Image 1 (spheres, one colour):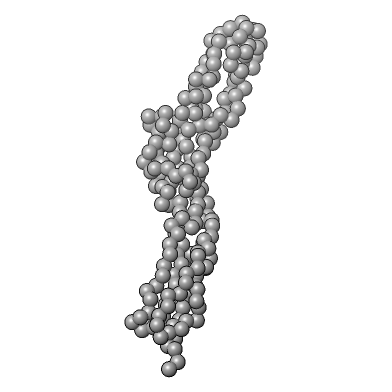
Image 2 (tube, one colour):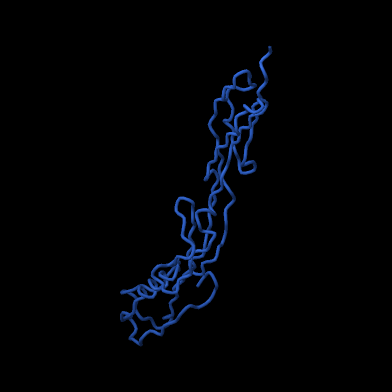
Length: 196
């Protein structure tokens, strides 16, 4: 295991004469480890063609912990097995849940100045304006890294409601851009009574 620097397993090959083929295959063992979440790095034993030499009949198969990056487009369900072919598989952590990979942005337009005729705030929400990814170790199930939030959201504009007897400083409002640093953007529209 190149990830931890530990020996996972060993196998003593059957004895044989120099120059004859070694009757052994690494394929099944490698497949078993891949089912446990490992990834093959290198194998200096050639299945089917490896022959005995006078010396140096020691072979090493290098494996490492495979990783998986979970995205909002391909989320995982916390508690589900990471490696379905492993009955003792670690499970996906809560960090892999879709709701932990997205963050909302809002645009709020405030209306003021028309007394009890003043329209209510106009708030628009984009649930997945910002996204991030989580990378896990498939052997242990541990979270290796979580990316920074990415993205921005530019909202549409809204026509200002007409209130009889008042004029406004903006006929349209909105069109604001929310960022990771400023996810909840706001604007105010002011109504003023018409002159008598």
